[in-house]
Image (cartoon, rainbow, N blue to C red; front, side, top):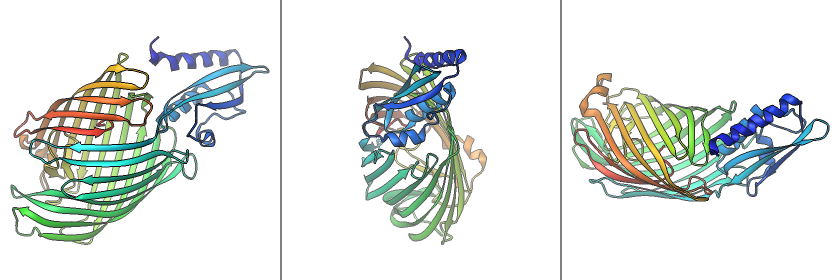
Length: 421
């Protein structure tokens, strides 16, 4: 039987039972939860003992459970009891959630850079994420993070991040390029709130220091060789999520809006507004195919600065293009790929993909016509492989090779953990 039809048939069965009689949930059980606290799950689901059996609420609970990092899959069983009551059981298949991760990235003109780290996605059995990373990209960096979306209730949580980030950044001006040692050290605090099953938001602020030190390359009038600036940032994120999950397969639509105001104490790095929205759409193709799409639209204050906020980069938007090869104050990026599963065993999955990454950027202080300028358009088709473990959260090791077909196109391999988007 097609596995995608099973949840539908179960819900049809529940609906059929309910048409014949109104059933009350007399017993509510959770099986399969070993690391995840049962009390945490009880507070998270909508169905409670004493309620009427409702297939809509059950379906929503199942989807909510499958979105948790600690759970790879979930389903339910209903047993009819005397006196128009029933027993409802949520069956949970847990993930292993203490996950090391690594990202390696390069292009034909770049040295290798990497990021390694460790994350526990189900700390204290309450789906609290604790993480740390180390990165080497010409210089050493590290970061620490805590994310607890259900810390205070089933809707309200908190996230805290600390980063000490240093890398070699290209700065673009007057058709020339200079390399700067760039450091960003700061602290971020976010409040997390879930309005309902599909809608949530994040609101918070951060304080950080940016430091630029000239290394080599071109120089220009008005472009400082050294710069150290204290900044503050206010952030708002709105997430609409209607995705459905079946292990590593996804289907549905998601929209993630990110708005930020960045204040500065130095005119060389002026204050600015920045906003971008990721629209993602996934479609199941047969039993083993998945079509995945991401459209990213971004716009920032159009200041004439070599330190523009949007970058063209291997790990963010265009696979194979290189590490931070350009900057802009506006962008349109489309990533589309077809994922085909070749091997699907009880725990192991081998998946291949073909993709096209394309994007264009507005130059600092430029016009919107920059977006249609062939000099700013980059298109990179490519192929990749995915090696997955179905019982370990986000245990997807990916290898992608992208080849540029537009002017001055580069090519390169991008390694990472997790799907590219």
